Structure formats: C-alpha cells, structure tokens
Length: 171
Ligand code: 5GP
Image 1 (cartoon, protein in one colour):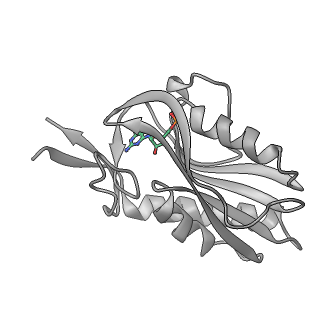
Image 2 (cartoon, rainbow, N blue to C red):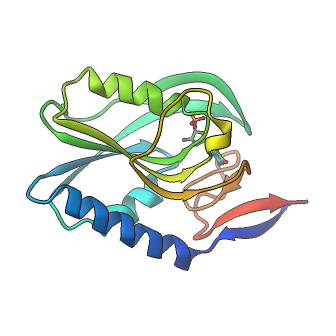
C-alpha cells in the first residue's frame, strides 16, 4: 500500500470552488448554463461546483477515455455522448484536470461543431507544464506543478476517487 499525503486540503478546495461558483453565477446572470461533466474524474467537482452556482443549470455528462495507468496514450475516445443537444445553449465543460490538453481540445472541437451559444471550460486543476496542445481553462481551481495527483474524483487505477482532499502518493 503506497503512503498518501494531502496536497490540497478539503477546506481550501471548498473555498476555491465557492469563488468559482460566484464568478460563473455573475458571468451568466439571467441565463441558463449547461454544465457538462467529463466522466469520471469530474464527478465530485461537478457536484460541489453546481451547488455554488445560483443561475439555473442543466447537467449533462460525457465520457472519454485517454489514460492507462499513469501515462497518457495520446488517444481520446468517446465512451458516452451527451443526453441532450447543446445547440444555442451556454455550455461550460467541467473537467477534473487539464494535463496534456488532448481531452479538452478534442471536446472543444466536438462541441463547437454542435452550435452552442457559448462554450467555456471550468477545470478543477491545471498542469500547464505538461501541455501538448494549446488549450486553456476559463475558470481554473488550482494551477499545480507536474505531479500525479489522486483524490477528489481523480483515480489511480480506478481507486482513491472518494478522497476528500487532493493527495499525492509518496514512497
Ligand atoms: P489530458 O492529458 O487529456 O489533458 O487529461 C486527460 C485525463 O487524464 C484527465 O481528465 C484526468 O482524468 C487524467 N489525468 C491527468 N493528469 C492526472 C493526474 O495527475 N492524476 C490523475 N489521477 N489523473 C490525471
């Protein structure tokens, strides 16, 4: 069993998400937002972020697969599409982490072709030093150095998603 260390504590996560929610609520005043969570890593961020947004929201989820173990394959596959069309909707993609940027650039291109009224990105974490394609989040929780993080939705081999803090494995 690897030892686990807290990297971003729950209290700091929740405080930052309250700020992001307030910012999104102000930016979309008078409108309805469609939050699209990217499965599975974003599920906890989605749950906390949507409760901090005060404008009407609709939730949808999309499934992608691009990771095997701790190294990216460079391939993005759709494993689940949206349930409803996003034409003329104000869409915010809700991502766990922008790493190489491959997933997000794929999704932005895919969604842009579907004619949304607007398209933005909320990313819980951002690792800019790992970028292979140029893509940015509009709402970013924390910018972090190049570390493999787990917890708060993020897995190692499908485990640890339920941790309340963002953690790193040590030893
Ligand atoms: P991308 O490389 O396409 O930007 O990110 C693809 C996905 O890889 C992310 O949505 C996330 O699920 C996973 N990923 C990237 N970096 C990490 C990390 O540090 N920890 C974990 N657990 N998953 C990561």
